[in-house]
Length: 273
DNA sequence: TTCCAGGACCCTG
DNA sequence: CAGGGTCATGGA
Image 1 (cartoon, rainbow, N blue to C red):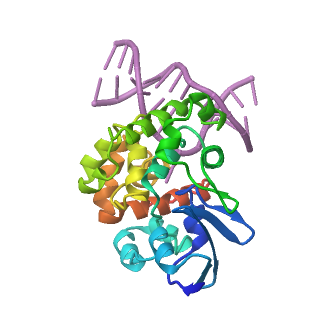
Image 2 (cartoon, rainbow, N blue to C red; image 1 turned 90 degrees about the horizontal axis):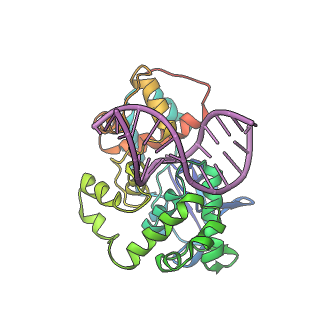
């Protein structure tokens, strides 16, 4: 089917580095949701897909009022330029378990390498859905051996993947409980999972639980935030989080994603607020 | 060869 | 509490 979208850019949304579960083949992006293959491409103001508007609205946050968000976070020249350059970039809604494991894989590596690990895990432990592999369940990763997990090139993170999956399977950790907690309590609870610290907890809250005040601070965001807002003074990650949540208000997470993509696309350029 | 990448964890002082 | 070393992997 085909339906109209406003204020949306599929490429920016799927390639800005927030999700590792869409693969581009030809003009289409492919993924799996609820054991069904999803393919989608954009032509001007239309999405063309084998799925439907309800599912894609959910996964790609087409229900977010982007103009309202832009109005809230457009605090200075830099963020305005990032918004202008990546107009239509939206956050995604990922499955929490998939998001947690993907970001555990993200530790101390780069985006192509994360994608490779996530792909390897899916191929080895997921199901083949019309040629695209689903992401494995907690049960499947909990019973996997460390050796098998390392064969997916997850390296020192293999033990975290297994332990985290086991905690979820044994109900020592309740993914649904996160929804009922406020931001700080939810973040603290997520860091109980092995391999999940403050940064990854913020990623999970932002990309899987829709907590748009979450502001993940990685090496890129730290550099650009220090450069733009702190005159290159060295400052702790948690101080950056607090500044951003105060500065960008309830949509700090959206600002983060634009600044992150901006920082990666414009590494040579320094812009001051 | 060395450095770096969407960090977390552990050990020191 | 802050600071540094370590951990697998692949690309530049």
